[in-house]
Length: 193
Ligand code: RP5
Image (cartoon, rainbow, N blue to C red; front, side):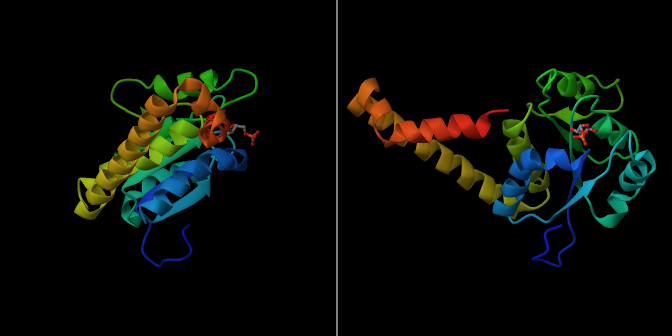
C-alpha cells in the first residue's frame, strides 16, 4: 500500500510470491509517477487459493478499479482472479530460470473465451507497461491522468529525437564511445529478464 496517502487504492497489485516483487516494482514506480494509489498483496493461486479468491471477489467493493497480477511458472493467478471479478485484469508473466518465462506467458495468455486477461510482455518491460496500461484505463474516467499520459509520451519523443540528433551528428562510432553508450548499457541491463 502506498503509505503516504489515505486515499483509497484504485489499483490492486497481486503477486504470487515475494520473489516477484523486484520485477513488479517497475509497475509500482510507474504508479508512483502518476500519483496513483495502489495496494500490493502476495496471494497465490496455488498456495493461498482461498485468500486469492476472497481478494478477487471483494476488490470492486473495496474501490479497486484495475487489478494487476504478476506470477511465474504455472502462472494461474491472473486467470483465477479474472474468473471471480469483472474488473479488468492485467498480467505480467515473470521470467523463470527453467523456461525463461515462456511457461508464465503461456499459462497467462491462453485464457478460455469469456474470461479475458490482458497479458503484457515477460519481465520488466511488461511490468512497466502494466502500470502505464492501468493508468490508460483509469484515464477514461479521470481526465487528469490523460494529461500525465500525454506528457509522458511527449517526454519519450523528446528523448528519442535528442538521441537521433546526436547519432546523426556524431556518427555511430563516436556515439557509442560517448556517454550515451553507458546509457545504452544501463538500459539493456535494466530490461534484462
Ligand atoms: C508463482 O511461482 C510465483 O508467482 C512465482 O513467480 C513462482 C515461484 O514462486 P517462489 O517459489 O519463488 O515463491 O506462484
